[in-house]
Structure formats: C-alpha cells, structure tokens
Image (cartoon, rainbow, N blue to C red; front, side):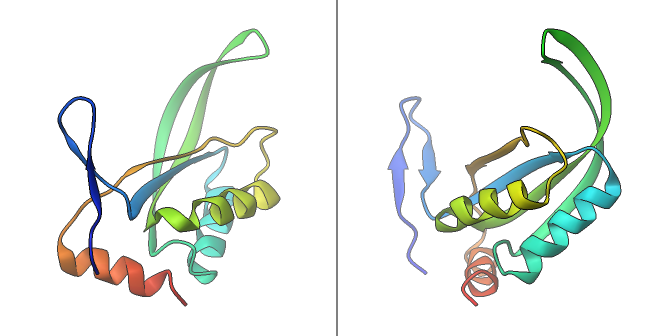
Length: 118
C-alpha cells in the first residue's frame, strides 16, 4: 500500500490514508454493540474499549460521567460510514465520533487495509 503524506503547518507529517476513530459510550454494553457492528461490517480493523471519566458541559450543566471510550483503527474513506453506523446504534443525542491521523508499520497498515476492504 502506498502512503500519501502531507506536511502540517507545524512541520509534522500526517498520513492521509488511515485514522484512529474515537467514540464515547455511556455503558460497556453500548460500546460492545457498536464495536461489534463496526468490526463485523469491516468498517474498522479492530477496536479497543477503555473505561474513562469524562467532564463536559451539556445543556449549560457541567457533567461528570463514567464512560467507555472506543478507539478503532481504520481507513479515512470509511469515516462517513462509521459515523452513520454509530448514529444508528448510539444512545446519546449527540454521539462524539472523532478521528485523528494514524501512522504505523507497513505491515500493520496493510492489515488495516485488508480488514476494511471486504
């Protein structure tokens, strides 16, 4: 797989082909359902589920919640389909679905490509 890169304003380099998607969920059960659906649909190669504590403002109230963070490795071109799938399954009114550029070893990125092209 050929990697396309571009220089960032800060002088760093960003991979354009792969990203790590981050999704917060209210319960482990919700996170399991979403992660399973994303892997089964080959939208992500793998997902990691980690308990976290979140602080945020929602409807003018500061909230403190225990949540589960899903991080998942995928291709950038799968992001829109991931967002659609998460919205259809998520219990939140406004699910947090973000992505950051991902780089890695050639073999690992090739595995991500293979898992998400089916």
